[in-house]
Length: 400
Image (cartoon, rainbow, N blue to C red; front, side, top):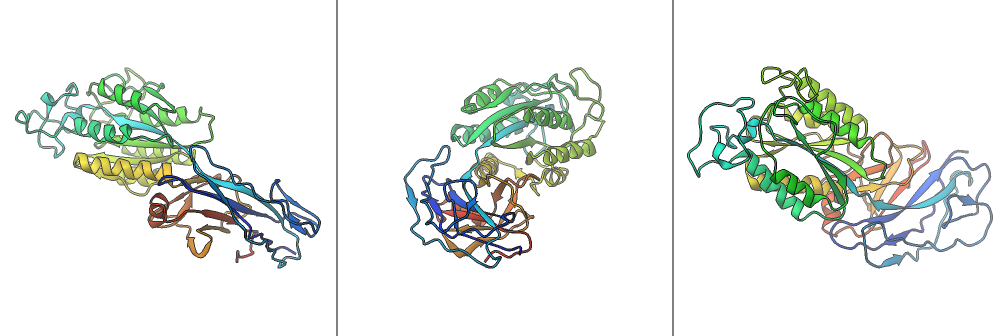
């Protein structure tokens, strides 16, 4: 028979801080040909026999300290399938994040946040009007420039960056035109937040907006990384891509060559490769950015019309990828038959939510990592949920 055989004994790893979660995963594999008396809780599969179950050893996940509490629940076995399902266990651990900041440094970033004038005296180098520019210059001391606002918000987040996120940086453009180099200004590495800050502080704005080429360069780079961290792109821009026919330094294109469709295609390819794309829009000319976010698997862009808006948006994105993304260890046999449960309470089971509003969803087609959204993520980060487990069921057999 095909069915579900579960062991309820779990190990709980105590949480430390506001964001750390670890839990036991009960993995149900429907391949055992003979009944199994007891699960081997310290190995990688079930074993035949009637001996008592061994203890579960809790492990502290990477980057998480604190003590480990071991459950004293009595193991129970469901006989609904006649004992034909093998059982394995593994820890569910918080997944560290690699975040590549793809940052717009084009000429229009010298404009005021409200788009009424240029803030060429506010710093950032001026260097051309960029898309939608004009010759109106704000009075000295009255201009809230997009670039300086962006830098201020990034500094606030990067200064407080935790070890749960490794940062990298790709600036666009690379030549004050439509060119983009394949190298990253700052490669992703642990402890690189300060280097990203220093690089941005030395950046001069100017030129056109080859967003498509920048995203493509970021994807190609992320594909070269071999660590097991979750990988994300954070695209921060103030509007429309305008380099239709380029991507190499010294290439053509220009302000009149709108490239929205090409950028959507590049972002879609990033999401397909497993790299979700979060989008922050600075200023009012952001009509295309929701389509970018939808293509990137993140549903909506984050508007930022003030330094406070920007800091809030960045904090929300970083908090989500650093605090609410978890490694399942192995992909479930049936990706649609998975339960995410908190605090050992069947009443606290998050629904799968493809809209990413309030529940959980897979972060990539591999089905090896999940991310929490809405109140479920909030209650992990504020410590309301102190433990979690994921149950992976056999195909067509409901998890009790």
